[in-house]
Image (cartoon, rainbow, N blue to C red; front, side):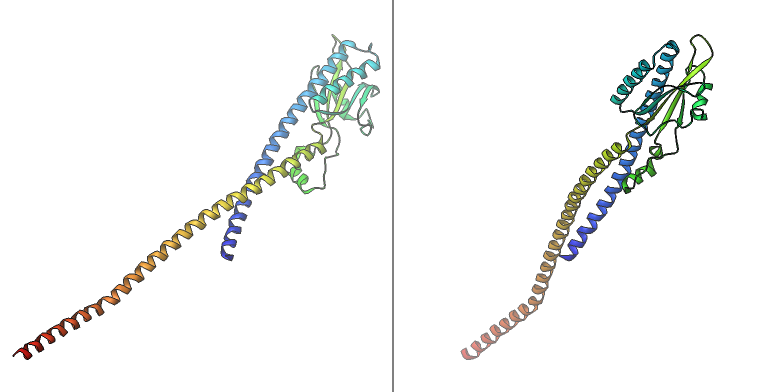
Length: 276
């Protein structure tokens, strides 16, 4: 019985190790592909958004009120939320670095130096051109083992704040008079990891159940095969032993027949003597 249990555990551990390795590899690969799609979708959407801002502000030039610009920004942010793009801040800067208008969902991401090259290089872009850069060195981090493994396998997930910039030209001229910048996250990091962690937990439980069932089925299959082989071997051994017994009994039977025949002969000879 102990050997049967050991054999079952060997099958179970082998199945579980194989299934978990394949499942984890498949999960990380699918997650990387999913994040890549989200990343491309978010980058494309924000690029289109900053271009729309640039065209809108170019046509309006300096005649638009700041409140109208903020309303336009906030309406665009609401639309981006429906498409799962996490926009944090929008800055509309003049060529001298002064803030003409802004929309902030994250007060921590304030501009320290509006004349920093990360902002001023947008003034050197051509009309209709956009620049995508990493806004700061701050990265997404986590203390969990699962989250750290994901960050190791998907390095782009570490990038926290991305900025897309575009110049605003004077209409029908080649002169730049302002620039617009959008700071955003491609995904909501905490929400994204929490969702994927729950999905992986569900897949892990399902994998363990499937591995247990397959191990049990395989163990029973081999158990019955071994059982029938042993049964067949026992029947063969019993048949051979029976033959041996019959073989041992046959010489004695012959001797008995010989003895009975000799007795018959002796009795006949005695009868003949008495008759004479």
